[in-house]
Image 1: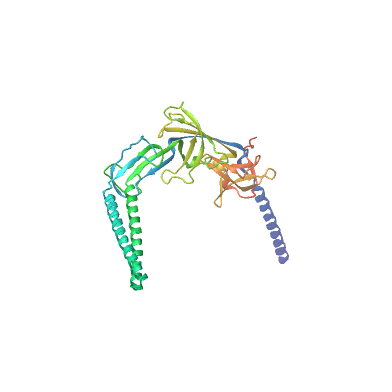
Image 2: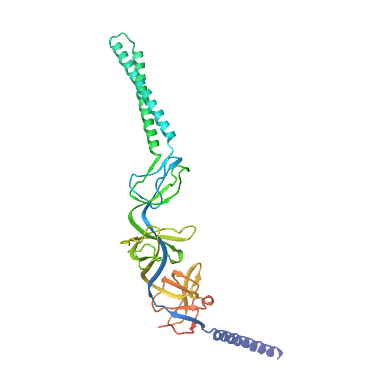
Length: 366
């Protein structure tokens, strides 16, 4: 009887345990309610941005000119703002050493010329003697060798003379083209190295508006299919305006300022827009379409940007990779990865998992 009672007790215990387990599971399932989140409905908007940036007027082509050899500057007859013509002298070096080199080279040419004349006379005399068979072949060969040596020596002396004359001409620095002097980097009495900039010359009449674009605003200045139009006006006289197009974009940022240089070719610049004038440029950039979301919507999925998208039927969430155009502390602009009508979670993204059921706290915006 005790065994029977004990058996019944065990059976009832097992049944109660199973029931309790089932009850706990049922309670756990019932406890897992949809997670409340805030979400918005995606709506593509045209990408249109207006940027206003400061810059200055510069010549389209500027050339830094310097001497081809080192020396002491004895004259620099031009100053900033001067108009120069092609071939005009802009600086001179002390040329005494080069003149001495020319004199020495000319003397070497004279000596080599005399030696050649003597060698030619000797060769001719030895040739006549050998024709009369009163001379040896060895003597004639020796005279012929001396003649060829003298000819080579004269050619070498002439080449050295030309080099000396070239170096003398290098002591005179001339402008390569018509233009305006925009900068000077050396003064008379200063010793300069070969290739060191002495004068900067702006060539021609074509000018650019040069803008330094911050990294955060660089999107849109990247080479588009059609160069964007830029309105430019003088900072000191806003009524003096013109229009140009972006013609050149720096491929890398300046190491110090972290800005990208953009050159805008001006089509019909007013006469008041002189070189060095401070200007303001305004660009209205039209692009494709983007999606603007709260910055809190962005999720880091293994180092790549993503957002949580809500399935309209099951209300389950899933991660979707996106391409971020730009972002700040309040807003993120997505250029690709989302379609119109999709519902994106914008709050509570870090507590979600794939497939989790959610409940929208706010109805998606129309």
